[in-house]
Image (cartoon, rainbow, N blue to C red; front, side, top):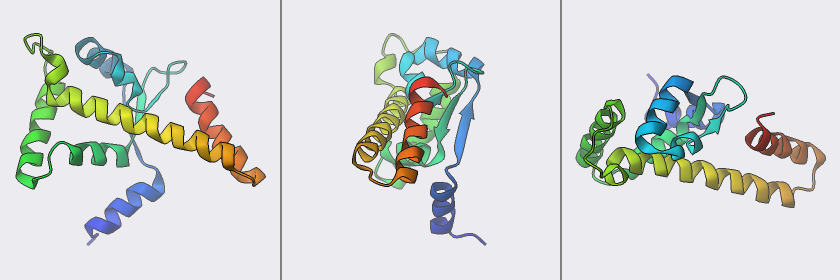
Length: 142
């Protein structure tokens, strides 16, 4: 049996990601705005999908509520809102789903900024190349 810590470490070490297909991306953009495309790597020049790091999804879910029972209810509400057609009576910016999306986008942006800072400080050529490849992928889809 896998323990929770082992499972979370596996997610972090393997850099697992959740793929959001282009059709779903565009549906969510219509409801929640362009921040949906910033939740992860947007494969704009390819298939239009968004790849969201799994550890970001778990961190954003944790941020929904600090009390476990509230987190579960909040997560259920996020899922319901993400599935809906988007009729939130003009308050879409205040939904848990929009907060979840903004959290994911913020996490991804912070990780990109951290990568740029590490690139600027890197002295080892192999590390510099690895970091640059990640930055170039985000910026240019290459």
